[in-house]
Length: 201
Figure 1: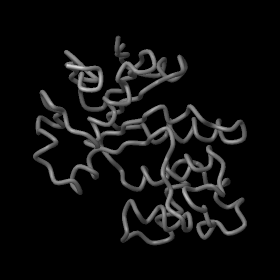
Figure 2: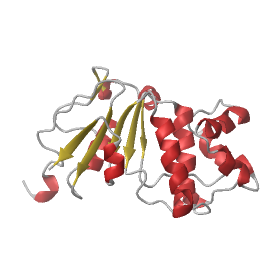
Figure 3: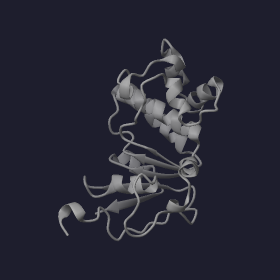
């Protein structure tokens, strides 16, 4: 078996009780992001299984799984359009008031209403009209609207600009309340807030 065919994760077995926060740490290339993608079913394991609530995620319809588990990546993907249209991706049936309330719940409404066009602000292709931190704020509001029971954060605070770092950190803390959370952590301060820390060697 050559290096390209070798498994990214070997002998990994983790059980996470509902409502617990787990930080996953390890060196670059150790498999942290692979674990996050497995939990969100962006990839499937070649051996073994990932279960949520005891059910193999491969037996759950994708739309149902998206309601249960959501991944917030290091580089959130935004579609070319407005903040509103990017939020509607989470739940197309929501009203503008409900979309705005997601920012209120995360205490990001001051940022949203400071934008000249509010929800109608154009984000540009891949969100390039917003800073990295602002893209993450939209991504967190989208996650709040999806309201998953399992939240997976893949180094979601690693590329922040100083102007939004505090806002993102505070919004993340509010978003994590009452959920099962798996955090791929690169900062000790992030790992320190977890109930348990898993080290991938």
